Length: 354
Image (cartoon, rainbow, N blue to C red; front, side, top):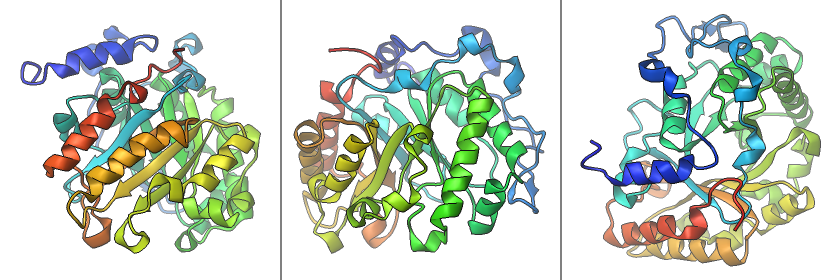
């Protein structure tokens, strides 16, 4: 594999500067297979059974001096480019397969995005592999339905939350955690009061567990910012590390560019003085050149209109009709994608100054 993909070695060295990789002493145990008992569902909470430890490293065994603060992830300039990559939605759902996109761009992703729904096993292997190769993990951790969210707010799930905090702290390197994203969608059924109470409780537990490498990403849809509904879900400046938004370009909105979807989000991020991330973006390729044109415009818009956005994460997933966002396969699209990914603006070294 290495000889066929020489770009991997050079990129890892660039990403490693100023961040470091996991200790070489981890050796062959860096990516352990998850035990068969891990992630057993607790029917009373909708969560995984307490006591399982798929990493094999409890929170008390990690020296705090080894934990890299999440703040070091924020680039001083430019924007990290990342993606959730899933071209076969039936294979290992929710777990990104970044190699499929990297084989086209010949560049490692700055951020690799995966999902963990409430009650699912924590996939240490995906996150540790990302960190070892120089990608920053973005983990979207679902909170379950309103009933489970309410139980979390009331403290019923404290042990499970502490367990999750310990696993993520054991990674030692910065991780973006998007706790229960798109909370504003009606189908979520969340009440703002319950959401805020649950968020604050989870964030407080992570602080108590000293998971300082974990950055909490508050991320509704782009529409919540336009309508102002975002304010009813905002848990407070002290409880949020990054602010994010999701928005897609599709035929029903005339393949809207970033400038039509995210200006309200951008203003909100500035007002609250938070690093900003476009956590899910995608463009549907329903006409020749649409994706390529959108990517080229996004490359310009992030530089000129949204210069304080510090990351953009593409949703490179196979779907049907308007929900098919896959990029590889069209030569024009692939060329535009490579131009974006290789632009120095999208290859910042976290924490570096230009």
